[in-house]
Amino acid sequence: MKTIAIDDATAKLLDELTETSSRRRSRTALVRMALRQYAKQTRRRESEAKDGGLFRKHRKRLARQARALISEQARS
Image (cartoon, rainbow, N blue to C red; front, side):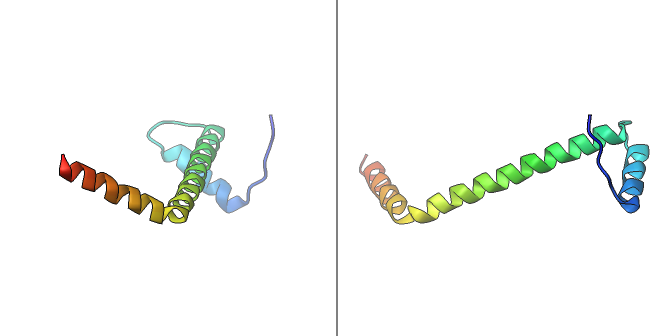
């Protein structure tokens, strides 16, 4: 088990959230849940940025392939 230091204002906010939550959670559980959610969102943003970079890098080829596919479908 590890401990972390947080400032008084954050500790007060954490206590308020644990007390007013509809699902009674400990401070540890709330911090754990928030950190996991933050990590998931950060990883998703990084993945989307990487994907966006690939789309930008290959946009001309993708556009050419899309036009060819649409043209082929129109003939069918």
